[in-house]
Amino acid sequence: MKDLFSAGTETSSTTLLWAILYMCKFPDVQKKLQEEVDRVIGNKRLPSRADKQNMPYVEAFTNETHRKASLLPMSVYHATAKDTGSDDNNAYVIGCCLHVLIYLLL
Image (cartoon, rainbow, N blue to C red; front, side, top):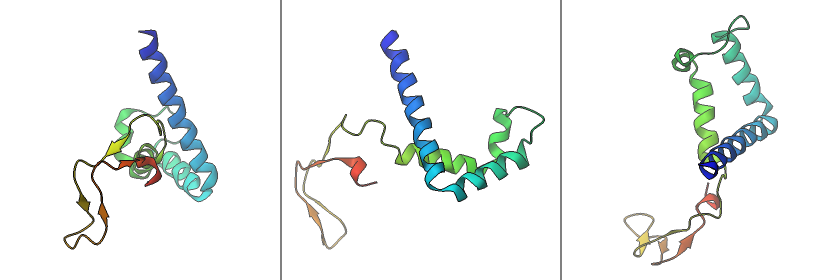
């Protein structure tokens, strides 16, 4: 049980770290996030789950953070099961059994 709790805590803290890093790198995004939070929630109350539907920019930022964050970059290899092409013309062919570090492609 301790391992499960520790793994969840580590994932959450790493995700928050990536979100903070993205906001530091893109201050215009941070400003838009803050504006949306101020407009929807204000400073008179705490946020609730009902606010989520009214904050599409915050939702998009959260989804992008999960998509781009490198939580476990070396944990699971991804490999092709057969020769794979990029399009119908197979302009770019990836050979069978090639190990891909997927986080490098994001």
